[in-house]
Image (cartoon, rainbow, N blue to C red; front, side):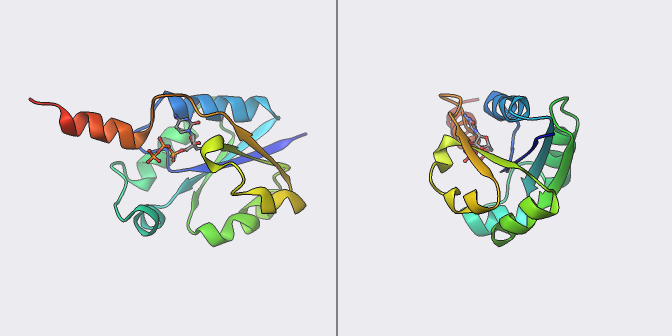
Length: 132
Ligand code: CTP
């Protein structure tokens, strides 16, 4: 039984999000997803997500590939979450390559290639630049 954990904001849910979640699940038998809190995003990016945390969590929970979800309240608690959920493996997109290597003493760390040409930031920019 291989338990996988991954983290993200998953704001304005898009195909890149679905792809990484399905590929993470395929690496094991049980997938746990930490959805970052609105407050945590504000601290990190100086803006709140478009979709609130309860809704982002609800969307992720509804996915067939996802077994368990929780709200990630702080970045400093990552090691605690990995231990608390008894994860064997941490999976992240390769935009994070190298940034989670220090967790290798408590679990495997795998970076998967990002889906090209889509991100929440890019979606916001595209919508913003449209002339209606
Ligand atoms: N991800 C991915 N491919 C994409 C976009 C995201 O594999 N095209 C992955 C990220 O690497 C991360 C997870 O999805 O592991 C959640 O990423 P998140 O930051 O929520 O999404 P982004 O679209 O990258 O958001 P932003 O533009 O705000 O950074």
